[in-house]
Amino acid sequence: MIGFAANALEVVLIAWACWVVLNFSMMLLSAFVLRPNQPCFTGFAIVIPAWVREALTELELAAIVAHEQGHRAHRHVWMNFAAVCVFTPSGPARRLRQEHEADDYAATRGHAAALASALVKLSTHPNDLERAARLLRSI
Image 1: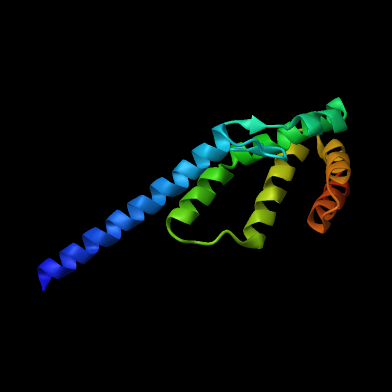
Image 2: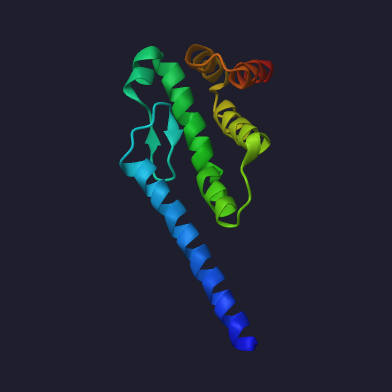
């Protein structure tokens, strides 16, 4: 019976290790092979697509970069990776909280108005419009 339990645990650990490797491989793929359509921090680099650079002013672009630096400073990508590794779903509340943290990081560096303007230019999603209004209230 003990041998069976040891074998079962070994199988579970191997399956979990495969899950972790799969998710890390997907992170690497998205960071170095795929080209995102939106500004993002991949866990390794900040990526700003050409269409975004063309659509924004220099101040708005600096605000977007500061926002993405906020994701890096708060280690959001790695916290989300760790959560996935232990089968904890991300959920909309966590994603919105992380966006607010990155917004606050940019706002404390003087980018609140420019980030709000960039959000309005780049998106009509209600969460992004709420974030823009929240940033403007913080000024």
